[in-house]
Length: 274
Image (cartoon, rainbow, N blue to C red):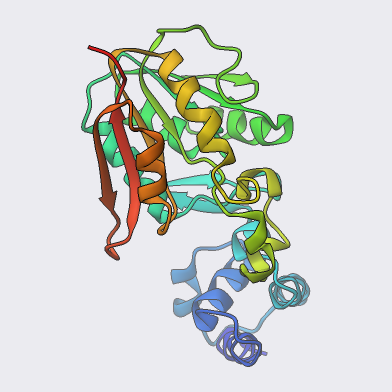
């Protein structure tokens, strides 16, 4: 079987299973099986598929058909132009979360903390894009190992701390507090995509029964961590903005920003007090 035929067959299997972007997914999985870039496939479309390539490709297709996300099969995901390692222990970085980074980059800061860092995508990116001193916290030891590995591989200077939210950090120590907290309500678990529900870590997805449990704890903790006039920047769900704004009623300059689809995505607020 040629590479072109293998791609066509894989794309058809994925399409019949209602997997999104079937052709692109087939290309990514075959390139991963071969150990090449996708562009190599097009230049060698008439080449015969080697047995080892076919075995790996077939396994990857089977895993994707069972719902496993492509990023967990390949073990990587791009974020802000850089490749991050991902495993089942961390939330797969989403393009929407780049809005948190972009908002943070607008504000000069000497010290920044990323609460609930997961793969380390936010912390590593801010560290590489600025001269700020960056700290990242994570309650999951397994996730923190992934984040630390990403930080080392991408040569970023981040201090990694295992703790619940900012509990291990000193008060009045930061100019920016950043976070993409879990905000999916547990009551919605049955309705979310199989790829998310069955393969990404619950601790990174669910914010209690109503989705606001972490915000209720994070907002006062951020007020403690921030220096005067410091900023809190958090990702929010498309339907959670006004409720989170209410939680920030004692904060100043509260603003909700939308993503490229026009949906509320980021909330930012200046620390309470004069």
